[in-house]
Image (tube, one colour):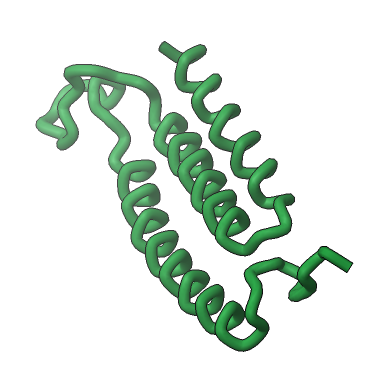
Length: 111
């Protein structure tokens, strides 16, 4: 299970970096979103991969319970990532309206 999760995190991060280096702004936004998903999965995996563990302490040994801190961090990161993506989309639409193209450097690239 750990190998599948590590592979998924690696593929998301590599795809995000590849899209981040593309010349169009929408591809850059999608790349940032994929990197955000990879980081969220990494933070969530720090808490350990457990199935059937109780989320709340009911007494007993602490090793038998899931760690709630990574879950709270990922939830916060999802909300912040959503707001950042919405802001980037507004900036993208404004930039496209002002310049007439959607290239990151503002140039058309045909010259």
